[in-house]
Amino acid sequence: MTEAPVRALTPPVSDVDPFAREHLLDPDPLHETLREAGPLVYLSRYDVHALARYEEVRAALVDWQRFESGSGVGLANFRHEEPWRAPSLLLEADPPQHDAPRRVLLDILSPPALRRLRDTWAALAEELVEHVLADGCEFDAFTSLAEAFPLRAFPDAVGIGPDGREHLLPYGNMAFNAFGPRNDLVAADAHRAAELGAWVNAQCTREALADVGFGSDIWAAADRGDLTYEQAPLVVRSLLTAGVDTTVHGLSACLYAMATHPEQWQRLRERPELARVAFDEAVRWQSPVQTFFRTATTDVEIAGTAVAQGTKILMFLGAANRDPRRWNDPDRFDLARDPSGHVGFGMGLHQCVGQHVARLEAEALLTALARRVESIELTTSPRRHANNTLRAWASLPVRIRPAA
Ligand code: OVM
Image (cartoon, rainbow, N blue to C red; front, side, top):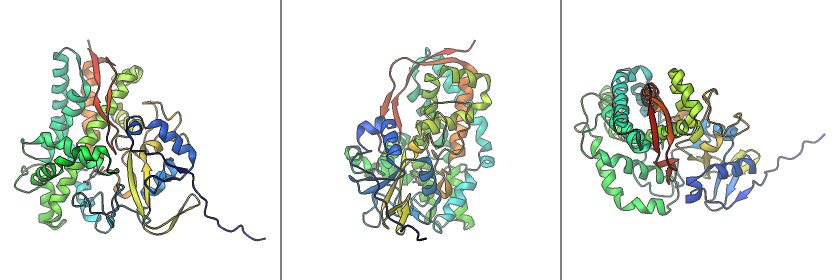
């Protein structure tokens, strides 16, 4: 008996541009095509390999030895191209350099450390809900809730000053566009890059930060020797980059889900303790962060295909989160399912370190709404916002009926 020789399979090839506006605004049809084409698809336009099935995305996410982040988690390879800003010590780093910043933030953003924010955020959520009720019950849920809540809660929790906060969303929008190709979306914001970058960096110094907050906690870690003083401002910068747009569009996903699934809204009203499940199900269903890349550190084989060292691997988190091989009726938003295991926050060593912050924000807002609002419905079509990485919104026009 002789064993069949191991042959490198040729993967399916697609010339699709997943960063084209039509796919960014409505990604589900492309996700299905890529998932069904095979476990690995070669995207000829960008010379990258793509993963859209749950098993393969998850396997790549947890295999940090073979699929590194240090040469960038966007299309650009930092070994050949100048990064647009100093690389993140968290997102764009591998062990062992990644370890210390990761440990510091895991601790500062852990559930026990967040307890002090619970009552403050519950009160803020109630205030915003009372405001939209008093304002006539027809409003844009994107601006008045999904943007308004994180924009007050999070910068306060970090401890940045009151001035210039309007720069946070444009900076995040730019940072998340920068993971994609240099298309029109990147070009549109290029003229603001220097100004926005300088403002964000200025917020990260010890002097700029309040005595109480995540920022001050990061500088205290440097005092203990858990970080160097050079690392501290960059770790603060990670919070300001990763923590605003993500939660804005994550909360939008919740509000959109509830406005389009009245029976799920009633279920949440009956059992407000489902708020966290509702948030994770919305993150699975919409995947506010759609994609990240890794880079092969050696010649590897993925699903029988030889992939050369240095190749960029594009992971479709949103496609994995709707893979019928993993999820029953994946396109359905359903509070009765267990959404845990979704890859909307990633998986493994780089899994979102701010996920408990995001869940606490969502819990505060959803429970305040569940208490005061009987029904939520769309009044006109919601509008999407095109971004190379985020499944983002521009507006969610709704009408709500106050609870009796
Ligand atoms: C960072 C960073 C930036 C964008 C996203 C992110 C989703 C992290 O600067 O560390 O995580």
